[in-house]
Length: 421
Image (tube, rainbow, N blue to C red; front, side, top):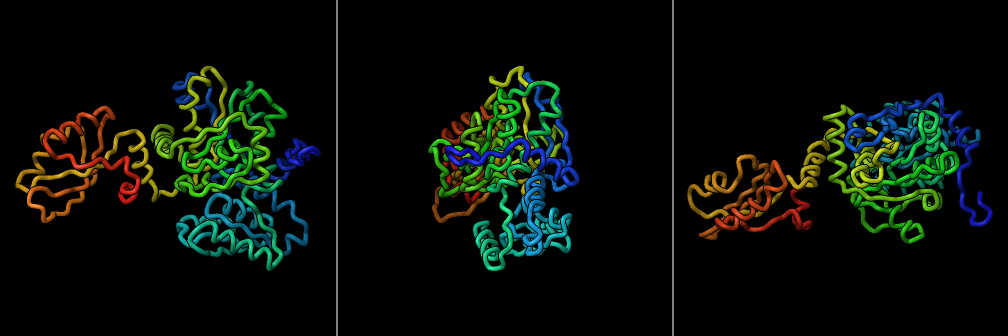
């Protein structure tokens, strides 16, 4: 503890104790050289594969370290957490291994696949309660149970023992690396992993630059550091659910604002591109938050040339039902998918004319919604078109306008666009 400003910073000694505590349950995950990324960026790009943990994310480290630290009295009363994702799985497995009863609150709309995973890891030692429509609903219900029954709440990030558990990744990276590390890119949600890892490097490898990566739609740490105070966001984009929080932890903010060398936000569409590339080219399955660190490399391409770079791949709990949305977002980000209102003349052969004369040979209609109106001259349709090259867009629009098919372009109209994507 720093006496001057009372900011908590985890000590290396405590992090080493955490490493010893979790060694029976947490794998020492590989630090693998990515040949593809190294060649593309003209650098040595290493992936720290936390997606290969038993619970498929790093969350087991912090959860197990925290629950292991409880007193016998606290253990007897049991623990509570609120989570619809990786933290819930880490807590569930920790409860089973330590034989401590836990209650896990999850929002009612949580996909059944995630609920079943938590049940599998926790077995008879956990009870799952599906409460409310949002994480906040589940969180408030969990806190109420803690207050009424004097149970211990296992926070996903704003806790000293959780931070120390996540920090063990930093120790492993330094032990595994055979050369000095110039950059580490790491996803930031609530900030537990970033706070812990950055502390390790600041003390043991201070020349390494630690870059935090957030979703563009949920920049809570970036905004807080800019404001020099922990700031709660009013609205966030929840697509990258493993890193989308309205407010980071007070503990984690205090550490990150001192330790991080930079913060960057990455568009959700770019993250979707990375997910698909990792699957198709490397046979690596990651969740959206797990792809954040690699997604940031494009924005640092010049800085990292000929450098030693580590990207922490934080998790792989991806819901297969989201694949179509991931593909859609990736195409939109690449400027290859476009939605229009097309005005078709009310006469036979108009659709054929549009397909033959307007569309290019590589253009593909992927969405078509038409409703015949009472207007005698024109009927409107919402049409989605996938292009082979982003440069094909302007010629397409020009042909539409020239032959009076063009109605409107919807990609840049979020109020309308949300109904399509």
